[in-house]
Image (tube, rainbow, N blue to C red; front, side, top):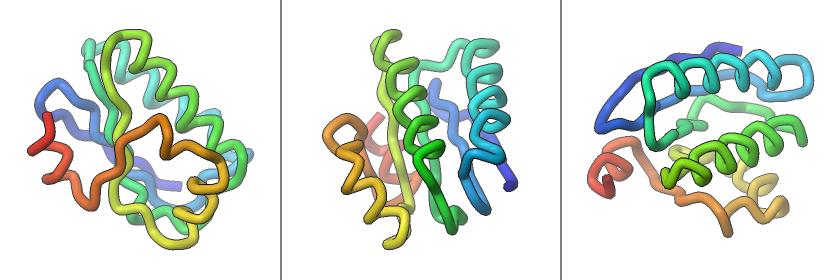
Length: 111
């Protein structure tokens, strides 16, 4: 699992690579939450391009970040969702809560 962060337009951009499962979801959550609270971001955008596996812990991570930003009046975005992960996200109903864009640039246009 590899995670990279960047900041643009008051939004924390998170690139997730590898597997997001019960082995590492807690660590990823803690890193995102620590950065989000330190800088005072309003939104989170998670790039799933490099994600090749996700289980229910990954769904929980996304749902928790949605709740976090929603309570502060922000939004959660997902980008570059690959077909395998897309199927899991569709079944979970997450698309009713978060906005999905093809690229980070599309998120920036929306902000």
